[in-house]
Length: 462
Ligand code: PA5
Image (tube, rainbow, N blue to C red; front, side, top):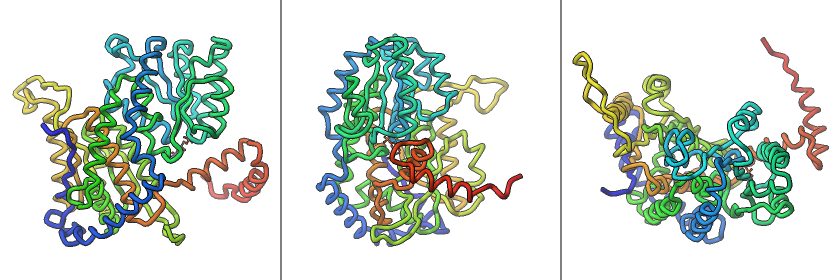
């Protein structure tokens, strides 16, 4: 069986979708723009701006990480990621897709001696305190991940756990921390040097949401027993497929151009709907990748365009009983991507009772039938949808999927003529937080915000 993932976009074409379906000619007319996009991506790659495209080839990095994990894994019961956004979502996605769904509840031998994995991606005291109540911090390794080295949420978490570690372990507390950050700059790098933490590097040219195949995502994956070399091999395989300039042979070009043409037709919402519990968090990771990369105020010429598809994360079959009604009969503003799995790992036969039609059939058949029924029903209602199929869920196919979406995001950004790789909106939020929380150097900003806040009094409230 081929281990390559496929994209079926039949249900986006005008042969099936009568309202706003894409014609063959329209698709072909995009070939030149896609080639230009590919040249631009290749130029940026050569200029060293697209570090995420180099990650699948960094085999030595994976070997280094595996060695570190082999040295440390038996010493710790828990591995906790402290990070947010691109420094957390990829980690969650990899654990959920490639490990047992109740991994942390398994006894250690069933985890092959690997520690339990937790990712704290918020500054909610209930969450942080709650974790403290269920882990022994002395037996826990904390991976503090922040590319900038300064993100308030991450540093706050770090301070809390550092204090706890210091209380319990004294000077030797530093053995329980691994910092993942910029090679030279930032507060976390300063701390790593001063406190002698083990550390890994986030390459300068890799943005947070594109960093899952860098040490940001690979370390926690390897601590969870995931084969990170196979993950990179899958990404390399997709990279090679996407080096072709003909869109019908290049999955990233094809995914991007379908999304682009649909966006031009007013399908401004990009729904991600995996039909596998293991792929649930892919939708969350994709939502950040798509939203933060493509939601931009200005184009490359500096013209205000306020562009960007809105990603929506859903789950089949769960959301058939929640959002599907809207997708079938609401506004014609969505394109749905179904994530399908050829062969699901577990299998369960539904026991037979009372000649019920479900008796004797498998749960997988039910899930996969529901998936096909959704695709068909959407198409019948003129709702465009495409299906990405993973032959099975493993490291090789997940590596392909991740790299496919990252490359497709780069193509989509070129088609929209925007900067895919910055995030001025996120930065603004960070600056306002720094100012309001009293960070040094932000005093004037704080005064300005406070003056604005006074003006912004809530006049309308119930
Ligand atoms: O993709 C991004 O750039 C962001 O989502 C960042 O990952 C997020 O803001 C966290 O930043 P940092 O890794 O600097 O703490």
